[in-house]
Length: 100
Image (cartoon, rainbow, N blue to C red; front, side, top):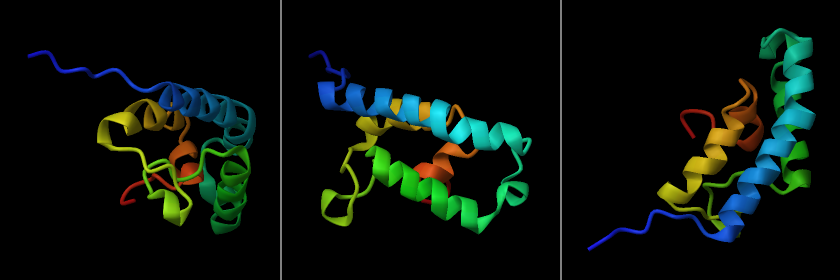
């Protein structure tokens, strides 16, 4: 019996939105500070990036919908987390940085 590992259209859409968010919002900040989140503003920049992720509709893909997330299961998280992980600050912005 074959196992279908394809992702639903909404997962592909969220991954693409995450890709765009990371490249247009997160990377410019990261690049301006050499990948040093403390130099970028530490906790203040984390709060700012997380609000920007909320505004972009990509925040907390792993969290239940009732808590403001997208409620993605383990396999559906992979393409979204991959796009966030393109940047050092990306997982922090989406609230998926370890140990989350």
